[in-house]
Image 1 (tube, helix red, strand yellow):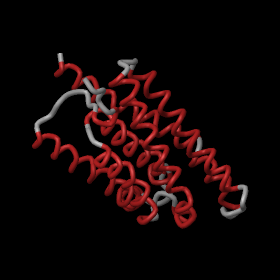
Image 2 (tube, helix red, strand yellow; image 1 turned 60 degrees about the vertical axis):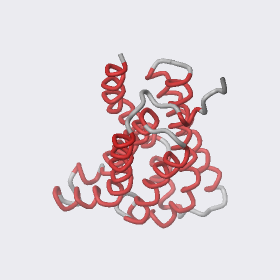
Image 3 (cartoon, helix red, strand yellow; image 1 turned 45 degrees about the horizontal axis):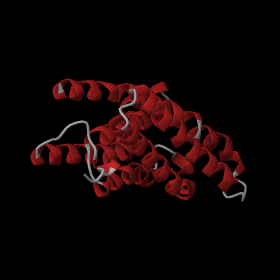
Image 4 (tube, one colour; image 1 turned 90 degrees about the vertical axis):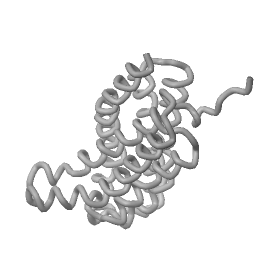
Length: 201
């Protein structure tokens, strides 16, 4: 029997209707959260509030939750590629997450896409195919994702593309913030994993 492609694995089989519903819901979250949530937080709590000033953490955590749920529940490379590319594009177009640095984040889009794909792929490979522990799979995926994004930023920065006044903030955004938001996403998505695992039983 031919080995199943890693990207065609999910924790359980869904009906076409349920799968379509999940894809629409995840797609809306991946597109709208980075574009509008930071703005809504600014309006609701004020631009100088602690919540609005940490909008990147909040948005990033939701996006990473969406990515991990995608890894667990969604099959097919076309659907997965569509989902992993939406958040970074909408965040840059919206301009509320990275603010004045948004224009420079265009250089980071390929690395962010690759990092997101690595997170999804490693969850599918380790958790769903190799049956490894959820958190071991997640930590491995997070390390690889952060390494791809941070090292790409460091390599691009060598050419002086990013304004010096933004470099420190971008270093944090492409390193520590990525690690924190992916970790929060892993913890939140664990509830989805457990719920689905119980239904499989």
